Image 1 (cartoon, rainbow, N blue to C red):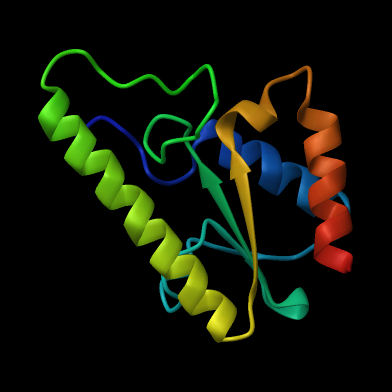
Image 2 (cartoon, rainbow, N blue to C red):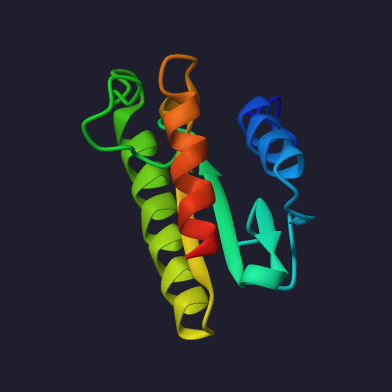
Length: 125
């Protein structure tokens, strides 16, 4: 697990590249907010989290499957991730921030354009 990156992943780079090309300016991995959002747009008071389907338990996604080996460890770890994520989202909303969660599968080539357009629409609302 030490080889798993938590910053500057390909999905993050896709979203950042799109936002920058559309004129949005942002901060990366903003540590002073709960959950250290992957992208923060201060002007729009919006936080974006780009979640891996496996690590954050994307329900109903074909990329999320419970591991067969060491299942007790993985169940505990993934459920803790989900609880922590939800607590961070609630804290951010209580502080007046808009929270957007983008799943890794939503950035696959066939659905990427729709996802990014929807994110842009949510940001400027």
